[in-house]
Image: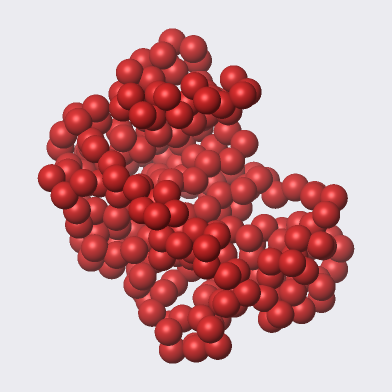
Length: 249
């Protein structure tokens, strides 16, 4: 399934999230200074310290905007203030809410070149990744190194005009999966196969050559803006996705 940002409506006033549902939010990170200053006050001290470690100002601003939007979105489900949310982090840095803030709520965040995606589920592991589709000089060597044999064969079979999209289809789907399972790059990327051919359904093909295990998961492609591709991976074979566009009020 592919959803374009132009079709994403604003969210409903009342949010209801049930098992098997996935809510996907898209937000711009290009903000006016006055808005950014307001959002920075929502962050915890450790988040503010992390923001200040960025070398480039644009990266700092995007981090602040993305983390503040995450807090604002999650606070709508929990009916608490965004400042009150507390996070803990897994061994590979995946954030989750502390028990008192809604342990059943799972979420994931990704941002790339001025856009952010947030996926939220109830009692389902979820991962999301977003990339701007572009030409990378060493794209072929990256694919050879990190793609599985099945994926690399599919990638090399693509015509030149589809190589960039095929590459980022694969990359976002693999990133979203390892984020969903909370292992990050400690999970060998060649241990599982995803589809990547443009125009074909997004799918987790196998996990360590086990197709039945892969069928417990689903991958959905989301295209939040022209020139971007995103992937949502959830521990649910047939999820129901709702996509919304976050706008500051």
